[in-house]
Length: 242
Image (cartoon, rainbow, N blue to C red):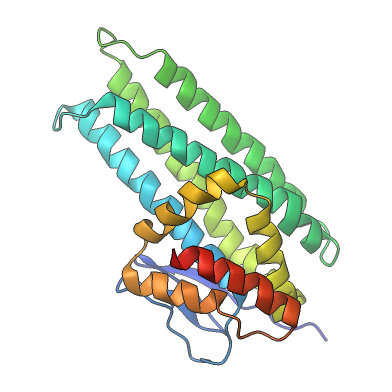
């Protein structure tokens, strides 16, 4: 008999995972009806929230730039776009190389569509950077085009992440033990270059609320069964602490 899947839903500024009833809420922190259930997969909710926050901030800046309501320094803005592109590139690559192949071994005909969406999102980033590289102060249409490109990117990535939260994460929680989930998280992190992690982890911690950061550390803490998972996640806990 099939086990009914938990559902992940958006709720205001937060994310709710029913059954394990986890929530990254507008006030911060994971809220749970089952405090003993600490699914490592929930760490991805924090990754997604950080990406959403940056997309929202960049789109608001682009809109302010387009409407002339705010003086925007172009160089720092470009640097933020480049960093977000790298973050999302490694996030997507890690999913394609680690998470989706593991899921495909247990649930068929799910992972492939998400990998295809990653390619489409990469094309949106390419279009954005083609526009950024063409920037000149004399190009009056540039601010409007930038706002349009940023809006399209925000919509596409937000919809994609929401689908993962609604469809992929519940399957990972259902089909993989807690120790297996911890191993997947470890492989996911290890697939990201060390020099990128050195930038990504501080950015992640600054992109979520302090109480959420502390909750994320708890998910990395070595409380799961299996010595290997404990050792691996303890290493990540130490890295995140510093």
